[in-house]
Amino acid sequence: MRLRHAATVLGLTGLTLLTLPGCSSSHPSPAAPAASSSSSAARAHDGANARPAAAPPLASAALRERLLDESDLGPGYTRKPEDTSDHDDVTVTGCPALEKLGGDAAAGGSMNFPNKAKASFTYNGSSDSELSEELYSDTEAKASHRTRQIFDAMTSCPTYQVVVGNAPIAMTTQKAPAPKVGDEQWSQIFTFTVDGRATMVKQTAIRTGTTVVVISGSPGLVDTHLDKALKKAQTGH
Image 1 (cartoon, rainbow, N blue to C red):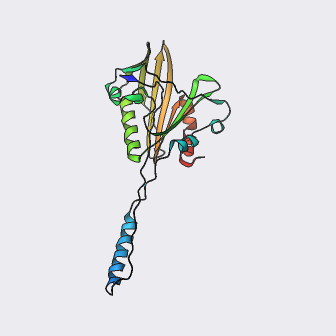
Image 2: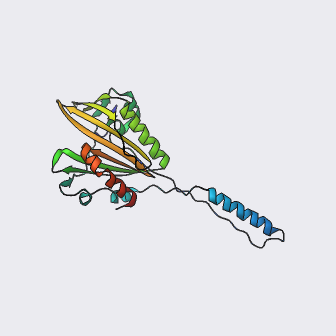
Image 3: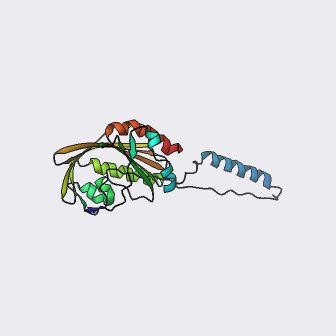
């Protein structure tokens, strides 16, 4: 199966705005007061039991403002230029669950959601100390379902292979404990082995309302900055 991106991050999110129209009447008949009172009581009862209106998904421009930046991360971090190139030469073999997903998800890449933003950083210029953040927004139901679907698929195959061009990459993955924050949490550890050299990458996703925050990179950096990323995604600062 051919994929478009060989990134190591994923994500999703969202929710739908609901509104309830009101109504009123005038000039009641003599018998109307009791009926009006009963109707008002019924509306009050319905209002007490009504669920709060759902928040709308955040647009991509709003998500970009909620990404971490160098001032959030501290000294030693440099933002990497965004990779806008297409990767048409990536295939995944040895994991049917991933192959069924299709698209970028099967290689651990970006999810195909309309509202998204991404930033990647290196720490002290080292390719072994990188941090990547993705934010996604969609309906709450879609955010939950899609993120769960992808993490379940990725951890269903302990080992598989990604081929980029003619270069094979041996992959291993396993579930990792996720912090109990937000509404839902997922976490996993990848190990990439290329030419005998192994690199470990941690990936943690937190759904908070209509937004999914995905942090990937060196395990220590992910653990250090996850809370900060979640707070900024929720509040904008």
